[in-house]
Each structure stands twice: as structure tokens, then as C-alpha cells.
Image 1 (cartoon, one colour):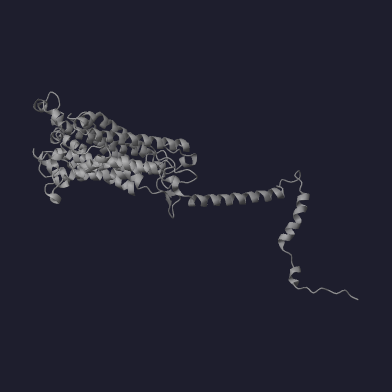
Image 2 (spheres, rainbow, N blue to C red; image 1 turned 90 degrees about the vertical axis):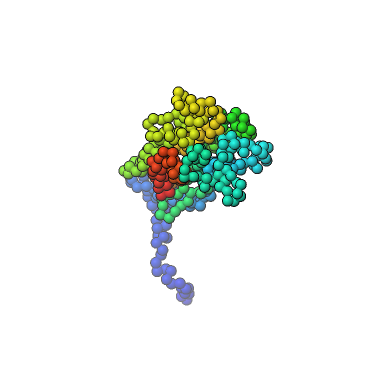
Length: 465
């Protein structure tokens, strides 16, 4: 009896076998027949292991890149205690400078002084000492000028003293520029982000060290400002505002100390330098504009060195040698007479010394404001000098395998250029408003206007575009 044949339910399965099965069947034979002495080919098992390792490496690389893009940007942001400290310390000085510019002579800190330093008349006493209350009048309510910009008159007389008002308002504008350079980048910070079509992140980073130069310059400026108030503390004390003077000193010194602790602490923890080093691959470039050893911008450097150098010379004279006539500056004697420098600091062995030498101590408050203006203008010039020649472009690296679209030095410089451009805008506005009054005193401010306007334009151009 013939054997029963089983009917095939899926007859197509026996027609051809999968190629993988045939390949797998030859693997043992290949491994058995492999002879290392007779061939230069790699062992099949080594080939398979290498392919597996490459697959793991590619998957890890993809995972790392995705992690970088999805990583929380907290390490790019400044520490919150540092932000709060800047708001308190620099904000206090910024309010005082804003008052000097926009409401000259108005005592706005006395209500705060009742709670903090337990002195209700310190601010008004200091304003009376500096004679700033001469331009403040609120007798007509909201119709009063109250020391604002409307107090600027087109004619200079001995009664209205437009030169003295110019010094006080310019001191406020320069002070606002200096303290805004710390407040704006710190308070209104935005973390770096990726943009379509850009090979890297856009924006400054705390962990990348972009804020180190700004904070170090702010630390130096705070120490200079605190030292100035400390030297003038006896005069402030004699005016009845000793506690307010100590507040100015403490806020500047404490902020400087905390700035130093945060910057050097960050650099020690990251093990990096302030100026990011460049690798050999980054240093080799055919484009001179992208050279990591070049300045952030040669055009900005030339502009700042020309304009701010003259501003720094005048500001150093007003700070360290008030009343000294600089013969190479046209009509400098008229400027000193218009701003009242011959009253509080008459040059020795001159007609002004014979006329105003005995009454010079009565104008010590005017000298205090003039020197404060010189200090603030000089600090702004120092920040601009450092931003153009203080460091090079450097690397694009921001740490953790992340790169920035712009180089390190360019990002750090733009933080300063933005605020200094706004400061130049404030100074330019005051120069334009005081030009008619200065012309009545035979002082031409049009050259000052053109130079400050040109520097402001260049800073705006390279900071925002």
C-alpha cells in the first residue's frame, strides 16, 4: 500500500529559500576555513563586531546631538542671585543718575531713606550742597518744569547758569550709560537659540564666558565709583548726607566684590580662560575677516579710538585736574568758564585765581558734580576701549560641543556696544539741546555733535546688525 502523501498547504515556500538562510549557513564554514597566515582579510567575526560598534557609535552621536538641542538652557543664563544684586545696586545708582538728567534737583530718595538708612533729608541736603535745586521748581504743580528738559533755555545768563545745568545733566546721562551697560544685558537676558539655516546658536551664554568682560569692567567701574564717594565722604558728611554717601559706597563696593566672586568662580569651575582659545582647525582660515586673532571690528576700533580718546582726555582733566586749560583744544577756556570750572577750581597765577580764589570753597558742590561727570564719562570711554582692543575674536565654542554663530569676542563686544550706543544717543540729545545756549557764550558744540553722532551710528550699526 503506497504511503499517504501530505498535501502541501503553502507550496511556494519550497520553491526558493531566503538569501539570509544561505548566508547564515556558510558562516561556520567560513570561520572554520579562515587562516590568518594565508590571507590578509579580516576575520568575519571581527567585521561583524566592527559594524556593530559603528552602529552603536552612530546611534550615540545622534542621541547626543538631540540631547544638546533639547537640553534645558539654564547653564546659559546668569545666576539669579547675581541678577537680583545688579537690580538692587546698579538700579539704585541708575535711578540717581536718571534723576540728575531728567529731573535735576528733585529729591526722590528721601522717602526711601526713611526706611533704609533712617534719614529723611539726606537727598535734599546733598542736592542743596551741589546747588542742583536751583533748577527745580514745583510751585505750579504739573505745569512746573521741575528740573526737566524744559529747563534748558536758548540763552545763557548769569542768572540761569546753563553751563552748570549742562554739567549736571551730562553727569546723569553718562551715569545712566554706565549703569545701563550692566543692567540691560543682565536683566533682559535671553538664552542662546537655534535658528533655521544657521550652523550654531545665536546669543550670549554665561557658561560660554561671553559675560566675563562686561562683568569685569563693571567690577572695575564700581570700585572706581566707590572710591570716589569714599574720598568725598567728608564733604558729603558736612552737607548732612553721610548715610546716603555710605549707601553709594556700599552698593558700589558690594556689587564689585560679588562680580569678582562669580566671574572667577565660574572660570575655576569650568577650567576655561576668559578669552576662548582657538583650535588649529579654527585658526586656519582664508578669510581675514574671520581670523580668530583679529579684533572684533576694525572699523569700530578706529571710530572709538578717535572719538572716545578726545572725550577721555577732557573727562580726565575734569576729574583729576579741574580748571586746567588744555591749549590744544580750541576754546577750552570758554568751556571751563561756561561750566563754572573757574569758580570752584581757578587756575593758579591767573586773573580767575585773583577774582575767585577766595570764594572757591563756596563752590565745592559744583566741583563735586563736575568730577562725578568726568568719572562717569571716563568709565564709559574705558568700556568702549576695552570692547574694541581688549580681546580678539577668539573661538566659536560655547562648551559641551556647542558652537556659536559668531565668535566669542564679537558676542562679548556687542553686549557693550548696544548700551554705549544708547549712552551716546543720550549725550547727543543733550549736546543738541544745549547748542543754542552755548553759542550765546561763544562756545560752538557742533564739532562735538558730529563726532558723537558718528560714533553712535557706528556702534548702532555693528551692535544690532
